[in-house]
Length: 144
Image: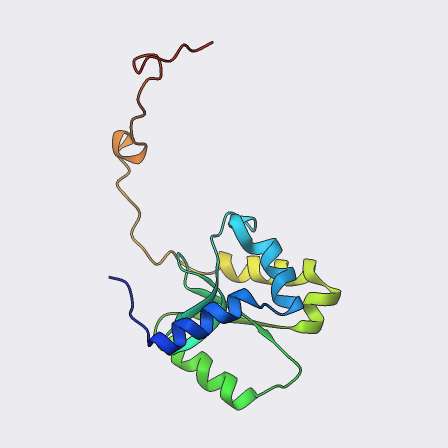
């Protein structure tokens, strides 16, 4: 069942997606379309009353890019609240993304490997794992 969020939170997340920081745009270019180890990420996702910079729903991994103003107490509180919901958080800085994006991606990939899947796998029966595809020839197409 999808989570419902306050409309203001969803609107703020949408605004943030439309105006990413330079670091967010750089990291998103490397995370989008499951480029990192096949992991699907979403960006600026409302979760538990917060907005996660990047979120991998299948494994419950959140990636946060911290700006120049560090708030360790608030960040720890936020991480603890999200942890109670079953999420793990990886924090990186704008500077790390700017000067060592490869290292940031390695850190995220290592954290992802340690996370168990959140959703039960579909049936392993061979016929249910891959839906049948209609034959193009039966549909009137000539196949070469």
